[in-house]
Length: 160
Image (cartoon, rainbow, N blue to C red; front, side, top):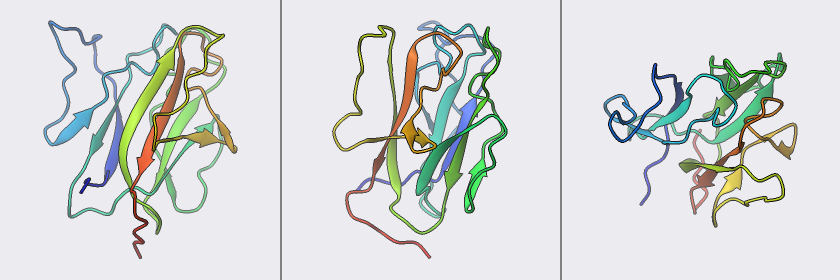
């Protein structure tokens, strides 16, 4: 059985990870080794996640644009996903929910550079949205097209 994701954070390392200096992830956390500002010239940003069996699982993810307030039951993470990009006109923030619902078991960052290409989420995954639509995490920033995908648990498990 997959363990559920119980926490998500945005890691902002000083230097870009490389084979010589890999991404340093806090103990007990897993990292996704894709820079969320890839090609946009901003800060190096990486998602990290924790799967702690005693903690309440994350059941919802969404992206907030600029000053948008999180919906009831969601907590806004403090790091702007467009931090330091050349064109800083759009701020994007990840928001998570631990309300009753289907737990999330995995995250994936899907990215590509060619504007004529569109890569769908992997089988069993769904794309994180903002305002009901898929959202490029490099929106208005240039760089690669970056999308966050998540995999819900295969059986709905409600948490009160």
